[in-house]
Image (cartoon, rainbow, N blue to C red; front, side, top):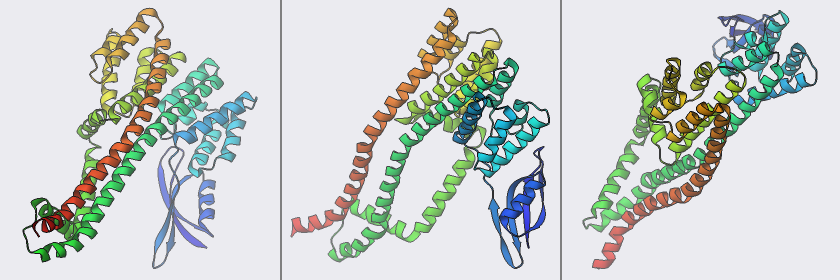
Length: 401
């Protein structure tokens, strides 16, 4: 028997810790589960040796939440009761953390709590939008349709996010390869040629001297350069968590060449589809705005949409408020105004979301098509300049010989 130190959570989210004896780490996790606790980490305690720590996955991605919702909808449509459906899904869930959460939800439903009340205890998994939709479905007696709508919404949001990630992955990879190539030349190739340049005896061109000095600096201080870069990155990361940093980074993201418009339209698509989903579910505009705005990941846009919410509360127009927002396209404000005046706001929101989604697809295709040759050309020019600076002294010797 071995001793394990564990950290776990009670059903009320209180964190507890302790020690247990078990034959293996899996047995330790099972014992903790039997105690009615949700294990967060398990550490094997060995005398004279550092503990071997197992951290259980505590993250549930959008895709996993979509699969859960889709399975639940399919089972409910097949006539399976909510309690039985949740039990079936629990048995099929691979993510141990999510599986344990579903177990607690099952226990809550079995004890007479509503489904929405149970999932609201796990805000790190079920966003406020999800809980609101489920609660609306329970109140209207149409839980199945609400779950179907929210699962479609999750799938759509995941597809948009995936497209954005794929669009940004290639230029980031190319930039990494380019920087790595340049550093390799400056750190390993150029120093070997420095002795050749010194043997020439003649004055070297200024560009070659600068390049040699940069190469010598990197060769001597490369470790400190890496450490300094990491520290700088950490400082910026922490600064980005502050209120000023979040707004500055949000504004910078919207100003990025190529990607700024892509980020803006993806965020507005997410907002429009969420607002549409809520309003079609019978939730009033003001409350729907309060739920939909925080869905956006850009703090600057969230601030401006929150301002729209306050304007509506004080009797203002949604469309006019959007027109006054500096980061929101004027066309969106005009379309919303038309929808308000004609009583077809839902149709306008659907049209906006569809239009922006099409524009995102076109922008991604155009961006990837343009960036590939641009990145290759940029890296080629920099590498070519370095090679030119390395060969220039040799050419000068040949000319004056």
